[in-house]
Length: 621
Image (tube, rainbow, N blue to C red; front, top):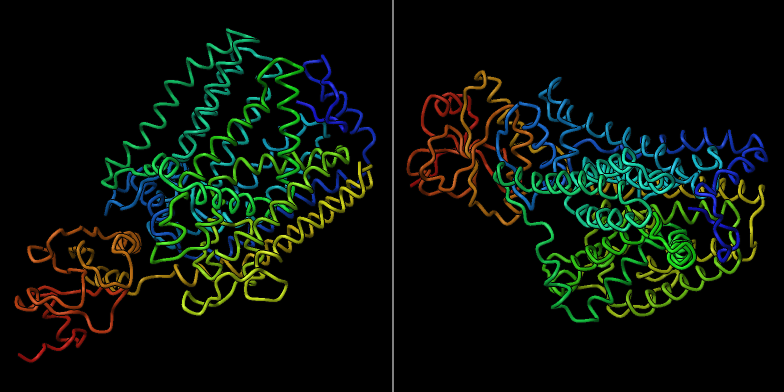
């Protein structure tokens, strides 16, 4: 794969056309690029640590706690309470499992898991930079580009959560690097390495199944160049890729949570109105574009040029076609998942991120950002930049004038779902559905200004690059310096969103702390049941179950389908329980989380706590 300054240039016949370019570039490099490589890696590490520093407790009762509970199970420490939710693939849990060999403290385990996420993010710079050298940059330049990609909010914000996103992108970067190496020399060993990398990628998340399909089709097409490598790759990829996908779903069923992610995808695509699908496409495209300062659009144009070159001029389906297939797969997945009227309009809990969802697309679009930035640094023609500018301007215009006036800009925001636009979190309104002025076209100062303010930096950067034309060595150095500053500012600005979400959704449940104190006082001999059917209205009881199960540690919290028949000493449930009161059960005084209370059943524990004055008084009959 090589990107010419002239996108219409013919690829060289050399199977490694980038090498001469890289060697020449390296000879012409000044010390700034070499120092820049060091500085950019340090910067990326610093920005990820800044975000990670604010992550003290899990904020996701499903995405984080389910994976942490899986890791505890895989470590051999058992599964106190099976997590509820749509299910998650276990690769990241495997990485986190050794944490539980050294601690049983859930707070410590979470902080160590966050640190592992930082390590995974920084390690990603290596395979990503090695892939970028194939675009025609030297190693220092490639390291700078890869570090900048990892420094953008779309990647740094994810470090504030114990989710699979870091491992998913790391595995994707290794898979793309393996594909490039296989394309350069299609041998059986390299095909096997690529197949294993793709299978590992599949085990990181269920959405990676579309990436697995793209890899399998690409391997099949590789038979045009080498049937032996193609056959070897498929022989390895198909069984272990299927095993990775099948075992991920099986683990969820074994742990009692089931697996239902993506089940509405086809129905949404076939049953939704075209206007709904169009809104989702525009919203997600806008989030990717403004969050990358327009670089994803540059990468998209370059990718299309290279795909055309591979298909038309080289008569082959090369690694850029693989990236394009991956992009198409995740676009169908992401758009299909959110293209429904309920998510956009009818849900009682209105979400802005449902209109802009970026989390599914981010791993593959990050490759486009890297491709676009690398092409600019190498020297991209003005016509490619102009095409990107026109596309971006058109998208911004449609978004600001058509999409934004009807969107719930005031709606709930989960930073991990739309991380790329979190630098503009502070511009979101504080209105509600009742006070919001529907149909408000964004301006620089009105309540709907978020959309316009977030769009301006991308337009300015692309306009400046288009005006400057092909960058020389100094121009490339200036560009990466500017982008380093912008990435730093963007990530630091995003901490307002991540800190706000941590305050809303994180924290230790006081009910869990109370149970842990009782357990410590009684040498862990107490039994606890969670009332599955308590619905206090303050939170989804699946959220409560997962959260309490994680923090009540190392106690085993069982789940009761009928608390009236529970034999446990402590029952966690709603504050009104006539049957329990009739049996003599009493609540611990002043202890409540998410509308749940601790009921103590008659026995020595109740007598002890009653003598200490820790129970609610008996209601008068």
